[in-house]
Image 1 (tube, rainbow over the protein chains, first blue to last red):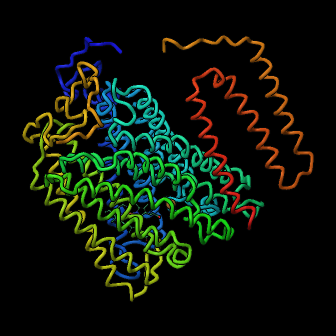
Image 2 (image 1 turned 45 degrees about the vertical axis):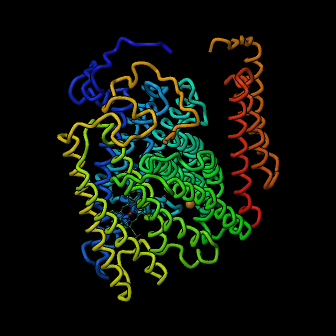
Image 3 (image 1 turned 30 degrees about the vertical axis):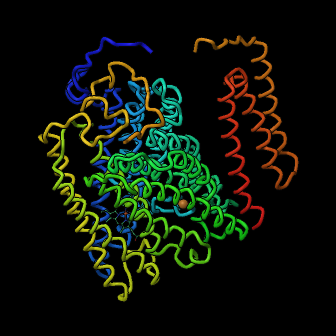
Length: 538
Length: 94
Ligand code: HEM
Ligand SMILES: [Cu+2]
């Protein structure tokens, strides 16, 4: 590595004038920090579309029978909502935004290993998003299969499936490129002295995640290609009428999509593992156990996909094998929870917005995780599969887990990213309203599912009415919280008070550089000296 | 890095590998003429695995790389094999 460089490192990455002007300065930038913000803004936009669709569904369900849309429209709405939220928000999620922005800084590097490839993955992401959205705008009927594209319906339905399937395929490439980039970056570009066991935990989770992105995503890619070929040429891999096997589709889809839920949650856990020691001003409890459990989750997560298929008609042997394997993943997840709690124990807790989000994360993540065990058990699953219970489960885990962690991370790293502080009072009010709405929106679905209300229907029996009203009201409260949070952040990014280098007294490397960081992060690549690891608090 | 050795592989080796790949391709077509029942898939996968390991070792230079890269590829292979085995918990017991 060269010791110093001639590039102007006295302006921040936000002010830096490269070759290009205006918008081009952003969308052609290979600076990992700008790419992180590109992802942030694109994902926020798509997220608001997804939220609007979610609100539309909840409005439809405020009363039995038709409220604002027909059955067919409801099917299209939950499909597009799911595809956007899963493939465009939570899968790229924290790696694309905070991974890009923070990973190089946290490991003491000037950028990722392949900056141009990094920019390419954003462009590929946008291309995929446009393809999916085009399936709604053109052709005859929006996709209506659910985000899971189950065969044989996905090649039998008359709706406009091909652009959506192809879009999901393209989005996969973006994921693979980011994963590859991060693996090489972490192997090759850690600062001198930063051994594997001194690397902060967020980069560690990005590392585990990157391997899943790299190995599992191609499976769904090929599977989607097969569905497309089936639709166009009728080749008969999944079509039972041609001797194919529709359950094979479910295997292939979930071989990717279960590991994909760990692509979502691992970096979320990583961000929480950064926030908690900082706001407890205490060494993280059980660093090595957290790292080991990260890798264990990534590994065991490959072998549990069948728990989505208990009622699909697969063999009994497979059913109980998958049920046992599923219970195994709960162990490393629980280890992490105990570590976070032990970190807080006897710490000097600093009650700030990121800490509230992290505490909220632990709460909703535990409800989501424990309900996962309920559906992971073979006997109860048969009863609860395809009911609202499942919808509650994955929203607690995915929205509660990844969403809370994302909001925690943005409130944690915001001063670093934008060089300004946000209004803490409004941020806390936003958190409170959001959390209240969240619980009101999704908790009733546990009850509804247990009472037997199926998911993915625009209508329901009168006996489910009361709980559904509560849930819909919750969606409005939560949206109010969301609006407060977003307005507060936008206003603060423009005109908040100037942030110091290290507003939270954090110990990882990103708090040693100016806020916002200069173009190349460090004038001089830091030598990493911390004696026992990245979280040495007194 | 500095102390890495650069291997020059003679063209002859590449040519032989290419030839073997072509032969194996024809073999995998020929084998479909034999009635193997459910072992058809096993046969096809076996031939494909031999081919891809040849590509990995020679064309992608795995043979001349540092051991840790080989370990990583081996690990990936192990995961892949395990996934296939677990899938057959369904197909062999239906
Ligand atoms: C205001 C925000 C949200 C609301 C009101 C909402 C509401 C809903 C509703 C009502 C359903 C359909 C239930 C049914 O099948 O009948 C649903 C499904 C789903 N949601 Fe959300 N949701 C929101 C946010 C999110 C977020 C942030 C994610 C991802 C992180 C997400 C992922 C999903 C997925 C994957 C499905 C399943 C789609 C399917 O199976 O077809 N949602 N949501
Ligand atoms: Cu799963």
